Every structure is written in C-alpha cells, then in structure tokens.
Length: 200
Image (cartoon, rainbow, N blue to C red; front, side, top):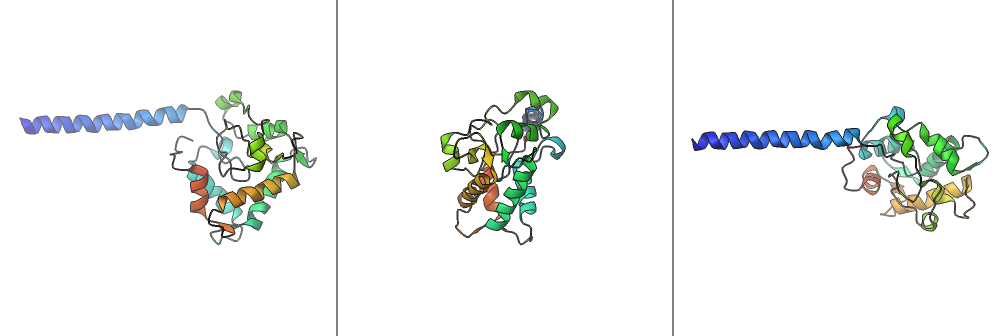
C-alpha cells in the first residue's frame, strides 16, 4: 500500500512539474516583445528575426562583426560594424540620426501586437548615457537608448563621429580584460547577464 502511495505521489509531482513548465512558457510566448540590441545598437530580434534568446542574438551579431572569423572582435572590427549600422539607421542619408528616424528604423523589428507600445525613452538620452555607455541596453524600456546616448552635445541628433566615439567607449567597457579584443563569452555575459532570455 505504501508503495502505491509513493508511486502516486511521485506521478503527481511529475505532472505538477510538467504543468508548471508549460505555464511558465505560455506567458513568455504571449508577452510583449522587448527589442534586444547589439553593442552597436542593431536590433537583434523582432520582425523577420523572430524571438531568439539573448545569447543566440548576440552570437549572430558577434559572428557578423568578427569579419576575419578568428573568434574575436577587435576595435577596428567593432567600429566598422558600428559605422555600417549607422549607415543603415540613417534612413534619410543626411549624416545624422534623430529619435524619430530611429523609431521608423526600429518599427520593422516590432511584432504587430507590440507596435502600439512604442519606445517612449528613445528621445531621452540621459546625461549619464553619453559618459557611461553600458554593455547592455537591450531592454526597450531603458532610459538609456543605445544610439541616442551618443548625443554628447545634447543637440537631439547623433552624428557619425559621435556614434563612433560612443562605440569606442562601449568597446572599452566590454573589454574588461583589456586585451584589445572581445570574445563571445565575455560579450554574452555583459549583454545578457545571468538572466534567462528564452522569453524573447
């Protein structure tokens, strides 16, 4: 009799665990999309890119930035990627970026149900943003925008020179070992932290 009770309890626990796992995944699947950004401000999910995990998204960016495929991203490679990203974001090709232009660029990465949410913080650079570029910036709701934070002279626009200077600071923050190059593990840890980003 005790054996039967033990078996029944074990089965019950297994079923509860399975239900818990399913219920944990459902809200994530239905939740609003938060755009993940590369260290150079490139959206890495949403739209045609789908919902990769943070680690998957960063790996995709890293493989692209590592143009010689040696497993490391140097400052030159990082800045080359930043320059290419700036040119993609500069929709009207006038040599500078403004928050409204960034919003138009990012709209393609939003899922239909999330577009109404907007990114209210894109015009808010925050005085700390220009001086302290963070390794992260992946959360849509962050006050520090990964691109507009480069507006160090506070004229509400970002030039290529400003963006590259800011990108150089971002590289230095990510290069915690001061090796002059970035590795995938270090970038992933800095950008994704210890959080589980499967919900994205």
